[in-house]
Image (cartoon, rainbow, N blue to C red; front, side, top):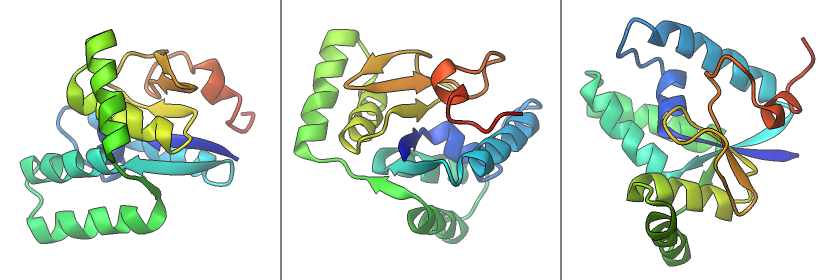
Amino acid sequence: MVRIALDTNVLAYLAGVERSSHDGLKIDKTRDLLAALEDRATLIAPVQALGELFVVLARAGVGPTEARAILLEYVQALEIADSSTMVMTSALDLVVDHRLQFWDALILSASAEAGATLLLSEDMQDGFVRRGLTVVNPYSPIIHRKLKAILPEA
């Protein structure tokens, strides 16, 4: 089964966080997409993305108790990609070699280490490939061929 990692923004839309007038559509698209992938992929949440999600939820007005409950629900429902010294070192290489932001590089490295072949992210470079992991923007008007190959035919 294919392994797909989720960036912070995807997790935030899944939690229903709305920061702009367009976010309602992204929330619906995220929930539909992840429901379609449910029996076709193992979904992975990097620890860094979960930590960032806690901050996003707080900025959206969610109290710490409720934010904690949301994160713990994700911990139960998703596979978790931990950060380790090796993951950090790989992230540092991405920063130096590709000029990525460290926290994005950490999410990429943890996802790759967890065996993910796709990282769904709105913010990272669509199509970027590292260690067999491809970044895919699930909100792009054109569905990336690697994501399309996994989805059920419409």
